[in-house]
Image (cartoon, rainbow, N blue to C red; front, top):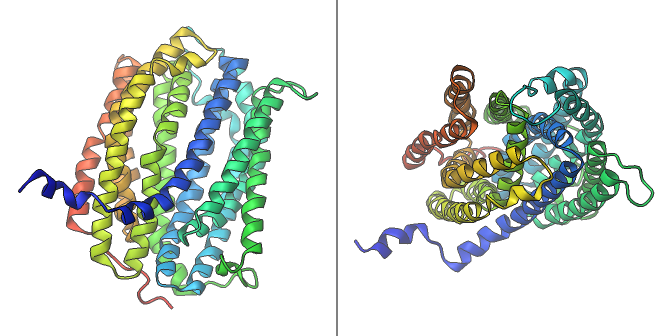
Length: 467
């Protein structure tokens, strides 16, 4: 068999890539701009001081848990939304939208209570002596100030995610992208005004960054919610959506059975990532600052292969809902190949730029060197994470949520976190080799994902009998 025949199943035609890009590009642009503003935001806060930047990064680790709980909870219902849309069942889409609204509000209230009552102890978990960088007490104060303002942004984020995710699953990806871009630009301008004190405003530092983010979230929420209610022909699920909160009991049961593992998975995964950061933080505040720079920059470059996960869940979910199983298998092969190829490009770019990006930050040389080393490690890990990411979304698209739970967060807590705990607490290994081991251990996850995809356990229509 020639090389061309071997690789042909993994390469699509122009029509395939047009449909893929129609979904992926808006997500890439929105996430890319979001991460770009996060980078600029990070640099601006860092210009005020390393302690302020570190305090903000610690709080963002905590808020990351809330964000992914929203994402995971809504994704459970979203599996049904995509398949109902593929089946052309508008009422089914409306029922899943109602479920999303109620669940988003429950998660919002729980997060508000926890973050309000336990903010001090949660921030303190990341504060450890080590290295030459940072004032622990000042970092804690700046982190608390930032968090108290950011709490006001939890509600609009939860609400707009319920709307935006439903629109995307029904094929409307441009509106969330446009709203995101407007909010991002507003956030960037407001950051400049509030952080440094321009146009007559006082210089608020980290607190100003939080205020800018909250205002931007309300802007994004108003745009998405307002557009949906004004364009009922393009979003027919919204017609009568608030006349009642009725959802058929069998569907609620199915969403809980299929969807709750996703909520638990995202909660445990995000908490696990926060725990990994806490393990690394034992090596000192310079490591926390370096990790913040590394994650902010690497997220900007990883948007391509991460957006492919969204494309898998939408394209494959709709094909499964329409009983186009062979087409779904073919799509998965091509999207997986494209995702890994894009990650290889990310590897090359990050390797070239990793010594340069940390120089943009007004921080210590110790922090810059740590960040540069971490970026090189992340660069080589990009193809590994791209394959695992696409595998996760493929398994999820067919409703195999318990398998995705074991594949994702159970793996993190059973394998990755114990390794990080042992390396951080039981050895004197420096941060760079410790971080590399924890990153590259995900090769095991890729092998498991390959086996599950090969077996076809994800090929499943979960709405064939839902009317």
